[in-house]
Image (cartoon, rainbow, N blue to C red; front, side, top):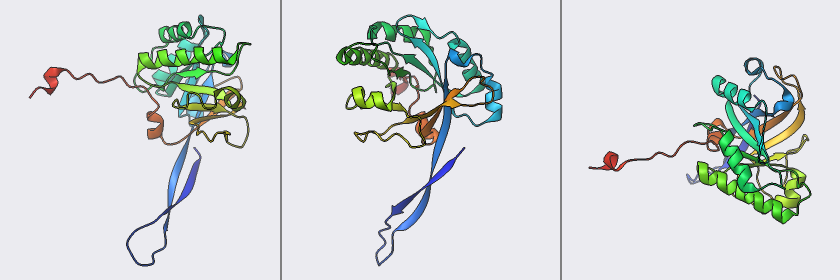
Length: 239
């Protein structure tokens, strides 16, 4: 795990001519992968033995009726080994957002501590942008209404700036930019995850794999995870 330090200037109001104190504040980078059937069968135990892995996203569904053939295996193995996991849906712009949301929710069993669902939106499928955006909005709303958590939006930097900038700004953002330089979105929007390579080599995964960074601490990542609402009965609060 790589550790970076951020120097922060803190003014201490104790009077006199004291200079601002310089305090080193550690900022963790959590590293993860995202996979689909393209990576073939993965030996997750070997992956975990050979390198630090803080989270993994797996493809669950696409469109209104496709389910990734290795989703169930990957999803179960990540849970068994205690690796923070998230499921993503590849959005087809020609499809109905309602049907695609239903397909995802019927396929994925999310358990406490799993990361919020991801909407992977990166192609227009030849559809007018306004139709694509409306159906994507329906998917996001339906999934949020069902799980009571805001889904994460995944896209690449070019697609974001052409179609998504200024829209869905209250949803967590995961941006693909294959570069040594971090995404710097034109509108100044902050991102939560950065997919910095699609050619990663990871022990236990036979094919090249996408590599990702979450720029934060485990506690910060936990805030992007799903936990069921706590329902308190009247009897529990009665005097």
